[in-house]
Image 1 (tube, rainbow over the protein chains, first blue to last red):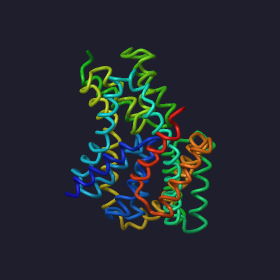
Image 2 (image 1 turned 135 degrees about the horizontal axis):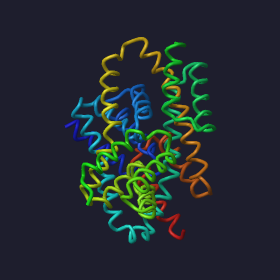
Image 3 (image 1 turned 180 degrees about the vertical axis):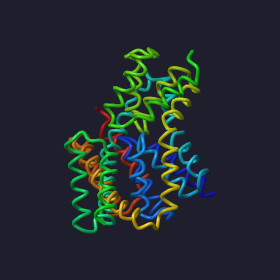
Image 4 (image 1 turned 135 degrees about the vertical axis):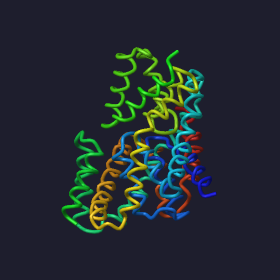
Length: 171
Length: 176
């Protein structure tokens, strides 16, 4: 039963991932951490970190969450449920691209959703920040990571790995 | 038609070496599929890339699914999806098993404490980049602020908030 519920959440979250891979994060945080308590807040942040260090999109973090909820089966169910909406929608759109392109309602609703995603992510950021930025050192690591990703072309996975090494030495 | 195995293998390669953000991925796709193997033309690639941007889900994966569909219909789309997802999923499962097994290890806790802080910084950077490209006029700024307040203050469900934002988009962006 839990696996079915989990699959439903991943399906909906990915069908609403509009405006970049991070768009699913507020939905996942709400459902898995706040509502069902299948993950702690800390585990959720760690799942994002795993999604970042592994190749492929952030969606890979869903395999981590699925594993936590239901072992190997859970991880596979999570990935199938995450990519199923993509496969259905993208194959249909590829087939009917010339017509899809002209649908104003798709453009207009996406234009509404994208800025809303930014607002939701800021709320999630504040929530996650409260849990993990507990002293000057952690604040410093966050600021340096922000600056590196914003102003240089360094790969996010290297920033995660670098911070992990730093953590082993500092804490 | 290309065999599914060949489609799977080239997307496995793309999915395994997909580091460095969207633009290096686009170059990688073009090199592998357009110039080296000549499976699709540059125009077909650009169309699939556009589809990846205008469909829900991770844009790069969706670009791959669209190319897979062009190469071998639905089975091609599935081969491309599994190929692209394979390495990341296997690694995530291994890391999850390791993480849950070692959870109480003090060294892992120290590592993850710093990593969690870095994730907050990365997320802030992604949001900053989205903010400057997506929030450009009073309509988008209003939607962003309203969504923030709806979640942070009123604790509404994010799924409902996104659906409402989509409906508002139909009204606000109808004439664009």
